[in-house]
View (cartoon, helix red, strand yellow):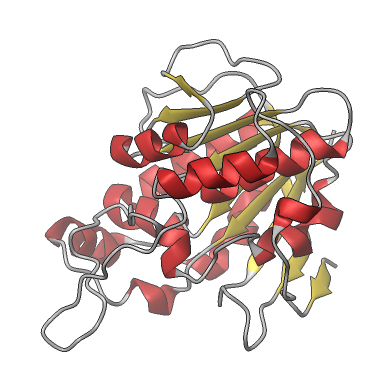
Length: 276
């Protein structure tokens, strides 16, 4: 049975616990660069006539400064509760799918860099090239599909993980899919999501860790685009069936983490491993 954790606890700024460097800059300097790039700033919300947040301009969930909107300013609480499962001292390569403007990806890079003296490798990908521009501006190199994955670097790439013609370089010890599954699902249907899960299983190294934070079926309710509504009507693979489907791909659930009142994020997180 998977282990269950009940709390996403409060976390302090990562500046005080991370001493790694990126392109010669201190952590404080990198944080300053991220703020200048707009990664840590709040953008103006788009509201509908009833005053509710309007997601219609963001068909892929590609919100500018998504994590600031969610109240994450410094350290993402999910990383703290996930650290015991990630094993970054020996799992040295990480893929962050749907990385937005790279705020969490940069934090993962800090953790990987700090975990051991050997260089780690982190890649963040997003379908929105403007968000990738923001991520690169805050620190890191830019990759294109087909490039060789640089070892010991933080990189970002504009890529659609659901596209059957897009192949990512190599394998990864840890793959993160935070609050992205719904957007893959409503844009590319069951086929696109199944294809994404298959790619993840194939890219994950033996003994690797896959983390997914899926939106619940209830959170598929407010859809603005005809494509989203059409795909929703045809969906057979519901979010509560994801663990069983992932098991057919060779991924076993090892932890189910549930948030509590007061946490930044309100969704369950599931951790899977790929046995050797």
